[in-house]
Image (cartoon, rainbow over the protein chains, first blue to last red):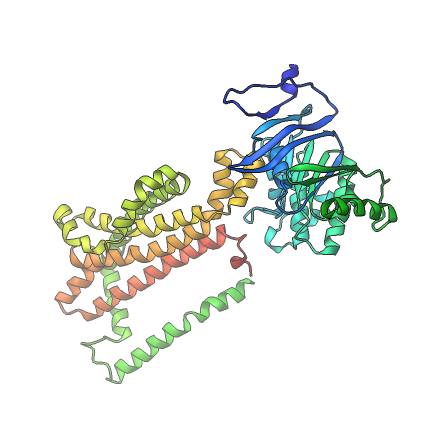
Length: 265
Length: 257
């Protein structure tokens, strides 16, 4: 495979001509934003983001409403293009889907059974009995193997979001982008989902980018917390706490305090 | 719901019609209802038997049903195709929707004099009217169904790499189906209505023609019989549509009990 196809550049827009910047291929890098700006009309949402994320890292992105954190995620998932700057993605392994997106809402197809919904995550990757077997495997991992043939409408909110997680993971993505997927769940279901997410992430070692406004959730799950404020990175903090982490420990509380100070200081 | 429970639920719908017929028979026998106003149900049953034996009834039902279905197939297919096109393509909608909405506001039965001038009283006239009548409910509801598909689901489909074909068959069409079925049931009602009117005014065969002939000869039992048969055919069409609905919308909370 030629080196150029190992790396893809989503966008480098400034002039209409598709000028491609020099890209170094780094297998261990998940993605890198370089000087990324995003404007909608007159409004600058992202204003010079530089972010380099190694493969396998769990990054949490925090910020107040409207700070641009969801836009960052949409750029990463290819749902939008940067106005200027570039986004570099790392090497692609065969048989893996590139980036998967988990939305705030489950967004399950109401007319497809649970297992068929998970198979949506294998579009263009697998079909038929192979797809069904893989979908059932991942449903087992999220604890819903016995609900495979039911309609989504009979599931609870937390169960629906677990199906959405299974759909996102069934194609073994290299990057999982999560846009506040636990925001609408009740507090206890939420902690359960966080533990499930951490367990699967530890097992599959994909790169996770979690957008959240829950600082406790960020420090409990992430290796690294990025605070965005006014379209810029205001804080880039490592969370050097061993796993499994104990919720409410002094160490996590101290980090939480640092982040909150930066958000409201 | 178990089979016997569903049978009971269906049976209860027939209690009222049976009671009405029993009361009607009693009133006729007691002489409260003169036979030249409304013949007794037994007289209607006799007419039914007489016309069945002569083959006249079956032939006329066959002719009317064939007309209804052919008109429905033509009008429904065009309505469905245009509904899809206008739901999926802004250009197509911009081009045709205004025109269609204008035509929709003309009562299609008002075209009868024109249609008779165009087609005479041949089959084409009936087909044209039925097709025009069923076109609009199918068109409007197909368009509505496609426009009301959750855009979040469409975005999800795109993000997960569905091509246009997969997006249509797995997201858009299933999402539009409940509305399309509403259109289908409306259209079936309009189909019979249009056919009755068209056959009553100009025809040389069919149920409407049979009723008009019977009126000429003061065969009031045959007139009542044709009306009852229309009611039964309408109910049959509606039940078929409901069955299809239940089979294809099993996922919908309204059909889970």
